Length: 310
Image 1 (cartoon, rainbow, N blue to C red):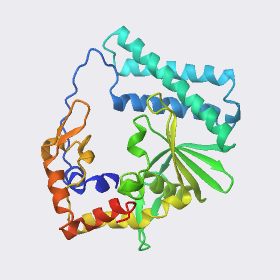
Image 2: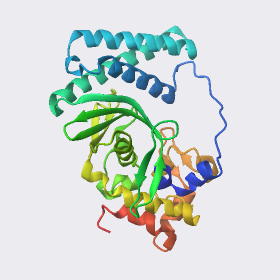
Image 3: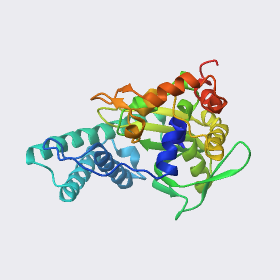
Image 4: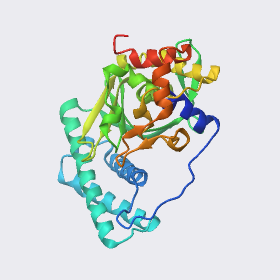
């Protein structure tokens, strides 16, 4: 759904035609884990620590929690080193030290969250919904239900309901709220509302809030929080997104920045700089010029201009 909001054409290529980039990993003597593997490793560390301290998370400020965390990090690093052999001992040591620093940043973020947001209970970790787990549904504005499935990093129980925690290891800027882009950044960040519906379906209580947490040095322990009321516009927004699929209007995005990390860049002749800044995106440029004329762009204009007074 988020990809459909970013660029319906890219959604059609990848979800409709099922096109994929060929897997051609490049050997880099100065890198051990790519960003996807590094993110998976960190999520494993966070999950294991929460499982170990669930039920007595109020005590994580003590020295014993640090010992537990360091042991988990060492065990996961050893496991990944066996699975993905590092290019050299020096690279392994360097990246391992960075993973340890990130884990300590995660722990400090959890300690700070307990101190400032009160004492909830770590209710569940890696909560699965849909498919082989308990069914979950997202209700559209029309009242129709959309079956959803996935896995949630963490669910905390607080008075009156739940708070969802989703760990992110990338740049917070991607998920920062931008009033100029409308609710959920024009649909690009629908995860809070979808997960809230899933938790309500599976656990039977309302979700009070959703938090993106960036417990890394790069993420600066940033939190992006959505309150319950902020998630209400998602029902109409998702229904509008599905119109692209129903009508077959798979239009290119009118914002070139949506192309920066898209796998469809080669098809669309997108040129990016060394730091993935878009230098040229012919289809997005065309769309920007046509969006005010073509009725098919009405939905995208409304989603992205809802917060700009247009």
